[in-house]
Amino acid sequence: MADSLDASWVDYYQKVYAADNTWLDYSNAHVQGQTFGIALEAAGPISGKRCLDVGCGRGQLSLALAALQAKEVVGVDIIADSINACRERHPQVRWEIGTPENEEFCKSLGQFDLMFCIELLQLVGWQKTLRSLWDRVSPGGRIVVIVPNKNNPIVQKTIARFAGKYVAPNPAELTELVSELPDVDCWAFRGMDFQQDQRIVPYVTSPWVNSSSSDITSNRLVIAIQKRSNIMNPSNN
Ligand SMILES: C[S@@+](CC[C@H](N)C(=O)[O-])C[C@H]1O[C@@H](n2cnc3c(N)ncnc32)[C@H](O)[C@@H]1O
Image (cartoon, rainbow, N blue to C red; front, side):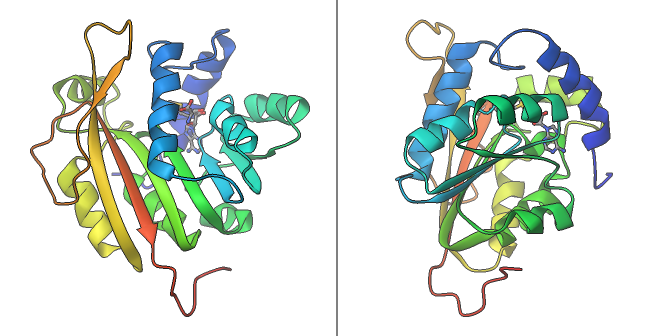
């Protein structure tokens, strides 16, 4: 599998951005809104935290983090037009064009107390990206990831459709990677499934677990990984 899948997605997302919707390639704004809500719940308190939103899209989650009184918010995306539009409209957030697959770029962003990686990992080399983002998490900090689940039959169809470009993990693979990360204090994940009737909430979530329950077949996985706070030499450069 290629380490870097991003080139093939630039064209795809430029077209998604050209369509005048706020919810990108989510099914609708409701699904996107609840996804952000679930990510914020997994993150815990935001106030006073340095936050990174990787693959920030139109920047709505970044703006929510700023409104929730984060100390600093950095929104990163590979689509220059979208980031430039965010820069013009929303100076309260630092907007950067780039990909977390580029380790130098990742390092240049600094360290973060909270990191959000929402609907991005399937588009990049997810293991390498998650490892290098983890290096940028401050002691005591946390990363929240929402990613399609390779064990889900609907996701499997998408994987087949974008053969080789859309590479989603399953719970067993994710937990194996977490077990290899240094300085993990604690972690947990849960599943998210679409409801057939989306009039109240589009998703139903399963309870948090922290074993490699590889039989979870939910459409999405939400994972939160927290770093130990008592690290002697954090990799901060
Ligand atoms: C499904 S959208 C999710 C956007 C946003 N996180 C949200 O939930 O609304 C995926 C985003 O990842 C961005 N993206 C795709 N490949 C990327 C890469 N290699 N590096 C950074 N961003 C990337 C796309 O431009 C798009 O904005």
